[in-house]
Length: 406
Image: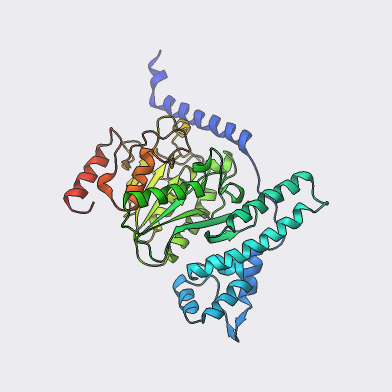
């Protein structure tokens, strides 16, 4: 073999070629499109109605006003007035950062009931194809599941593939808050699974983390949000290879975080493409976000943890048989998501994912990955297990323990 065969230039070209091949394969096997939307969506119509509405002769504030401004408005109302607004403008109130969380739960329940009625009509609409009727049936059943007693829906939008967020625990009184940010193919009909993919869906992830956090620290009041309130890429196509969806998701994630009640610390748990969202959000996160933990990450759109420009601790993990490790960790012309977060050069605290299996096994009960997430979520850093070769992780944990911060 000649010296040219091992030159840095050739290695770069090989990497670029591998990147191109992977993205072409992903594009040709996973490209899907959202449903076309004609006219304003139901959420847009609700917000428009709100903008022109009044309550007992009093004008309503801008729905996009700062959360603190909206919180003051709602606190000035009587319970009857707040309930009236939730029923008159359910989607607007249910997605309004700054509205009381209990009122958002009420509003979204009303919105889900209306959405279920719409899909029930479509199920029996003979003008639709059989495929269209089946899709309507799937969405109707998803709405029915979200309407089950005891569920707390913090956000809901039926447009397109749909967006939703659900809270486990008492968000108003939590000592610690965790937010699960999922990856591709996250939509209304995949928000919750009851089959072998239960812990690959946002609800299963959040429920599992909530139970693990309570087991890790029974005295700590915790709340976990299953946050699927962004439009994720559908399939492993070109949308998954770019940051377009993640950029919009990062803005929405930051808006949620800045509107959360109280001042309790917040941890982000970002899976797969969700770590791209968290990476892009990192530089503008509120200071109450103390930790960003990523699993099965294709990259965080940064060359290193320090380039994320965040004061939050950055953690990363990947199990040995996760296929994501075969994706080129590059960013070229907008394709790819940058450096590998579990690489030594990235500088994250690398955690053990022992006993996790595959790309979607990080939240399965009994795994090191879930135990580590729970330790971070409740602030019990001394219980966190570093990966075997992560000197940075062990050094940081030792320093934290010595300083009394763990």
